[in-house]
Length: 318
Image 1 (cartoon, rainbow, N blue to C red):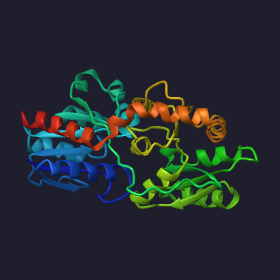
Image 2: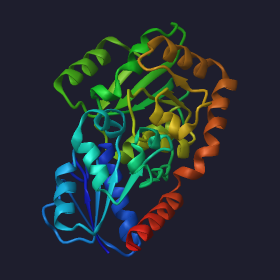
Image 3: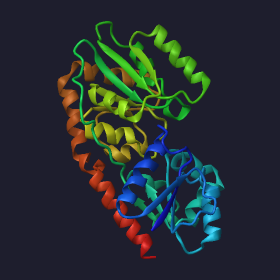
Image 4: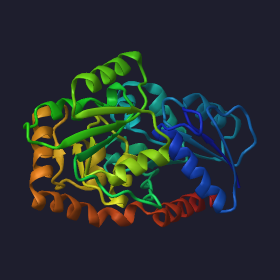
C-alpha cells in the first residue's frame, strides 16, 4: 500500500508527534509499504491516510475523505485531543466521525470517546529501546531526569520547584532536556538554573542523547497536566528507570491505577516527598521498578509492529 502520514510538526524534530510519526513510518515501510510524511495532505496519491492529532490534522482529514470516500483513514489521538479538543471543538469530533479507525496510545482512551465512534478505536502502545551503550549512574549526585519540552501542558518546572523543598543533605540534581516553546519558558528555565543549584536545564537534545540521559538517571519525572500516551513512560520502562509521574488518565492508562509513583497534578510537596523517598528508601525505589516490570512487554518494538500488522490488515480488508 501507499501510506501518507500527516503529522502537525515536521518529521525529524524532537516533539512527541514527530518521533511517533518517524517510528511508525519505519514500521510501516518495513512491512513492505510505501510511506510519505508531511504536515498536510495536499491531494498526494495514497491508499491509506494516517493523521496524528484529530484537531490539528482536521483539514487533511476532511480533504482526504471528500476526495476518497471509501479509502481507509486512521486518526491517532494525542493528549490534547483526548482531554481538551474533543470536549470543545467540532473539528476533533468530526475527524473521528470521518475516520475508518482511531488509534489510542493507552487503554483509558476509550473513556473519552462518544459511543458512536468507540468501536473504531484500536490501542497501539508506543515502543522504545534502551541505548546500545549505557553510562553508569553517578555516585556524587542522585540524578533525576526530566524529558519534556517546556510548554504549559507539560508543567515543565514542577521537578525544579520540588527540588527547592528537599533537605540540605539531599544529593538530588535535576537534569532537564527539552526545548522552550515560548520565550517565557526559556527565561524561567535559565533563571531557575542560575538560582537553584539542584536544577540544570540542558535545552533541546537529540533524541538519542535524551535517551542516554534517561538511562543513566536514578529516576525520571513526568509532571504533565495531560498526556495521550507518553513516549517518556515507554522509554523509562524499557530502560528500567523508575518513574514519578502525575496521576492523570493518560499515565494511569499506561502504568495502571495502583502504580506507587503517582503524585497529584501540580502538587509540588507530594513530588518532593516522593523524590526524597526515592533517594533515601531503597525498598521504595525497588517497588517502583517492580511495578513497571509487568508493562515491559507492551512497549517492545515487536508488540508495536504486530499491532500495526493487525490494524493495516483491517483497513486493507475494507
